[in-house]
Length: 179
Image (cartoon, rainbow, N blue to C red; front, side, top):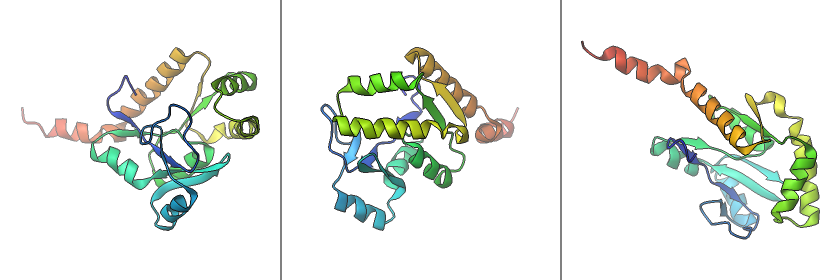
């Protein structure tokens, strides 16, 4: 996102507590479970799911905020969230970020020191299950070397932005010009 000003991170809403260094409205919108439940009842989410030990969701208000500024929302969601977004956001592009190995993923998660051991076990079990879901994504990027993975994602975004249907308004504008 640092390299493409069109892209804006879509901040999810969660019931989990903030980790050290996380900022309200930047990393997540933090709410309690009753508030999250009320948001579900009022149909305020494009998608929501129970993940690990909390609830996470993408609010319609957040995506509208990004679109109103003529930007492209970037989502960081689990497989459940991505599957739900596929139904609510036709035309969205889905990229599965795959670790180079389960061992590397475990080392990365352990090295963060952000979860208790029981939470870490849940995350690793969920990650193994989610890796089996790669086939319904549009692209898979191997996150072995960070710079390469970033370039791969940038290439996907560039190629997708040049698709005929996404270029239609630009093409029509050009064709309407008088010589």
